[in-house]
Amino acid sequence: MTEISQSMAATTTTAAAQSVTEKPSANALSSDFETFLKMLTVQMQNQDPMNPIESTDYAVQLATFSSVEQQVQTNDLISALSNQLGVIGMSQTAGWVGMDVKSDAPSYFDGEPVSLSATPNTTADAAYLLVRNAAGTEVQRVSVDPKETDISWNGMDKDGYPFPTGKYSFAIESHAKGAFLSTASVNSYSEVIEARRDGGDITLILNGGAEISAEDVQSLREAS
Image: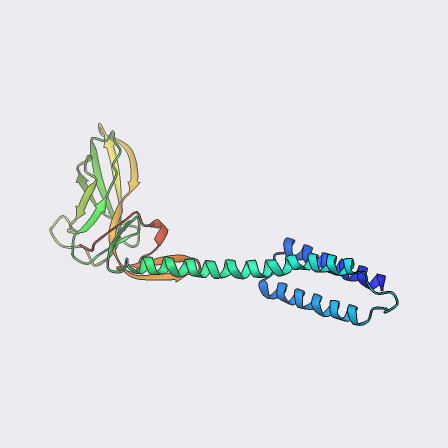
């Protein structure tokens, strides 16, 4: 019976080590613990009445495997907490639907002016707003005030006709004394039409179909 006890101890030690190094699922840990209890019951039923297993042996085995039970409970609590935090995040961002968010995602042009936020080079004496269509082709280059950060793009070409409806991206090109300095991305405001949870992240669907992570939102305002 001493051999059985030692075998059980080795089994419990191995299972406990695996629970730490391999980080199995809660279901796997629960299965291991149930198996341990069954083995312990069989061990007690088949022990020699004249030479019973020492109570200290049981204590060691129970103490070793109690850590597995605690890990099962901890994993369940972490999972529940993670789900709860996801629900909280979703409920907060759901209030963003119908509002304008600022990001570097392409903006949807539907005939109405597009509000932009640019940061020209601080040493620039000239700046140009670069407009690209959904294919990435530059369709317009507009001279803007290098000291101005808030820009409104009216969506009109040089002949006064509106550009086609669709998604457009923007960049600001800075110059000084006729020399090129730098090009930087331009942020725009877009209306949020849907908030969706993807795993642990919240994805915002913008007017026109662009998708961004809620973490990429730089500011929020009432829809214009």
